[in-house]
Amino acid sequence: MTPRRTRATLGPVAAVGRAGGPANGGSPNGGHGGGRPVRVLSVPSEHSYVQHLLDPDPSAEQGFVLLPDPPVPGAAPGVWWPHPGLDADWVLEHAGDLDVVHVHFGTESKTVEELVEWLAALRRARVPLVLTVHDIAHPHLRDQSSYHEQLAVLVPAADALLTLTEGAADVVEERWGVRPEVVRHPHVVPLPLVGAPRPRHEGFRVGLHLKSLRTNLDPVPVIDPLREAVRRVEGGKLHVHAHPELLDEDFGRYDPRVAKALRTLEDDPVAEVHVQPRMSDPQLWDYLRCVDVSVLAYAWATHSGWVEACRDVGTWVLVPEVGHLLEQGGVLAWGRPDEPPSVDRLHDLLEVAKDRRPQAISSQDRFDQRRLLAARHTEVYRRVLQERAGSLRGADVDVAPQEAGTAREDEPRRR
Image (cartoon, rainbow, N blue to C red; front, top):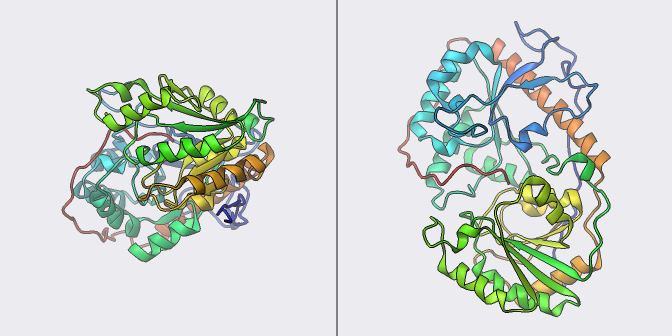
């Protein structure tokens, strides 16, 4: 059997002008002077993906600045959701303080009707909208209907549309008639750790991290065949991590099947079960560097920051064929997510991972990619400003309210 695997490159990222100046040599937009960086209200701003769109060169003149996330009434410091920048009244009140709105995450906190009002406010305030479609299938929502209604409004209304893979661009174009530009996911792990020598360890470590059992995780059909496949690998050890709330019957996503599986694994010498609080980012990077394979038991997904973090540190990712993770690279896929994987298939893939490391990525690779991403986004922001300056000032937003649900689960997560 020939295992399916990918080793995607960092690109493509089109050649663009240097960040800090107009990409095409022209003036950025009427009334926006070329010497001032574009002021971007990112929804959100304090998110690792968004922060890693900035030029990492400390001597570079940034082509855009990220405005801080507005404080959320009643929320703890650092909590950006529900994002005030998605409120129509907030946009009209603060339109003079920003040039472009760029939405990445967090729209699930709104109804479709609220988003329609918000889009109308953006048009009234002459503020362009850039939308990155990270998720076509939302990882926190079991019922995707309301979220897809949101995309049906947001995608056609965006002045510029981005996504992370060609496969996702194909889906967006097929469903909503507009093709996004493709920009690759930047690094997740801090640049000094990208491509750094990995800690030495004995045996072959396979990690299965259940986190807090996010909605799109379905580990039960995977656990038994995975541990049997690990048992067949010389020196194989299965390391399962879970947060303590998974064993709490009062936890909103408590699943007795998962709790039972964890108790069963505790008695299996091929497995080690670690129940501990959520790791800090440095702890997570150390964990990913110390396993040879990270298993993501996703039932659905579109893209994954976890996959990019594993690419950064040279760890294989083992997943079902969901979304467009294979295009991100460093991924081994076992088959359909709605069918339990076979022990033989998992064993074949683990042997591939044991035989060789995924394609190496260096810190310089990711540094260069970030410079290109910063320039690419500067180009997009300046272009939408130019187009908005030249458009008819009285144009109305061409969207219509639709019936929407309010399905939402927890807060948006970072990985």
